[in-house]
Image (cartoon, rainbow, N blue to C red; front, side, top):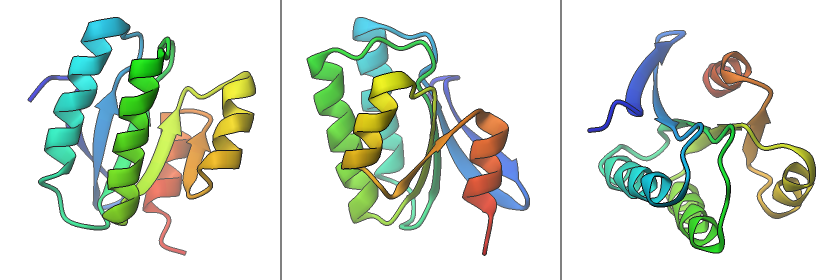
Length: 116
């Protein structure tokens, strides 16, 4: 597994981190595919934190991201994403409402592990 795909512990819970920050093109696609393979082996209801800060989203990357989101929805994963900004944020909120668009990783971890 890549160093960009790790498991964090926060508030006694495991959180699957996919750190795509700063990646572009083929490197981003390869990391996303690796994350899909990892996430497919995780139990339903897992906690996912994805950091896309500074990523350029091409149509191919967008399609793969949709596939990732659909798998996460089917499996009941709780998801937080860091790095969605501007117009992307507005569009994302209209399309995908069961994901927390976090200000930063600390905000994402707090939301993911909140048991309220």
